[in-house]
Image 1 (tube, rainbow, N blue to C red):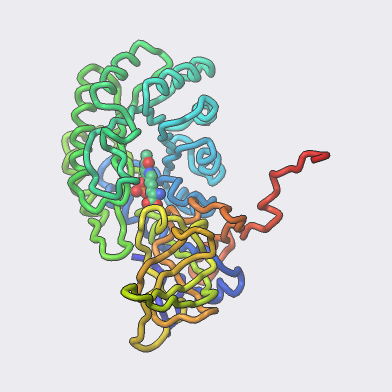
Image 2: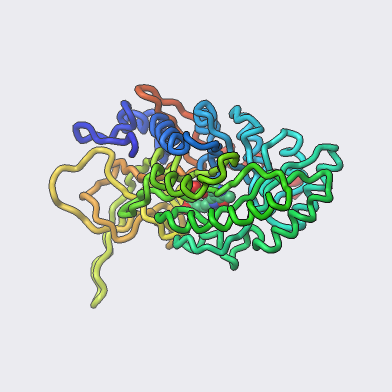
Length: 425
Ligand code: LLP
């Protein structure tokens, strides 16, 4: 569900023609829909409204301050993985007591920043990190609330790069190691165990791996409660998938129903969820302009190949190159007729891996046409880079009939702002 729809052949973002934004801001440009973000958050949050819960939006999916502010107004907390994300979340007005801090490589400085800010809990991923947490807490004279991220060894059946809950992945600690660490932490006045955490992967399209992970989490939680640990939070991470093409992920209500069933005997426990993609993914598009269209004629047995060369590259949206991810692509102004071409949609970067789509059937597009790349609101701009010295794209937020540039397009000056040529070189 999203608010990017065609009206009289023109793609609109809510009430605003996409063409109007593009003419004002240029391309490539990320366009987010405020109504879609609100709706996604509400549907997700309301699905859990009958149990104690906290939705901590996963900042890494889309960390624009305006997006974070909008979600904080909806009551969202934040799942962060760095000092930078903490800074953004606080700046956007997310209350520290709604922030959880995940990630395998937190530095002591980051731990100190988060502890000073008064976050809800640290999701600790190694014994070394637990020691570091205790050291920092002692230094600040402030006990640190924590959960251990367990690695439940559950197969999320998603792309290997975004599977995180298998033993071979670097994330979390095995249950038996976590159990010992919790028990040991009881002797440390600066470590305050408050929950148990896991996150098994991203873009999951089935419920059963979540249920399986929750069962394992719950078993450990109950065991620790028996040992007298005052735990209150079960954090199941994020991971609910979205529709990019043909996927059929469960709707949040169904996902929530399955989780709530598992928790029916734990009414005092607060369930924490860390959704990213399901909130932001389909709330954003990337708009790019066709620069050139060219064909390589067939050679011997090899068929010919068409290329639609656009002004957005893998530096703007890396998902197709990195995960072979599918993103729907369609012209901003519909092209009438049934005719299609089969083409690779490629960017200007000097890499053969620089494509947005391969062997895609498209209407016959021409230079100057604008193309919308759908489902680009999560892991789009945040993963962009300056490779090939390309200024990063602008970001626009549409809200009803209005639109706002929420991040300006970078300039050439921005590209070199932090660089210096040593004198006399
Ligand atoms: N919590 C933790 C601890 C995570 O590591 C992640 C995502 C999330 C929550 C949010 O997961 P989500 O609800 O968005 O699935 N760049 C990849 C996705 C990487 C996800 C990393 N962790 C992509 O473009 O598909």
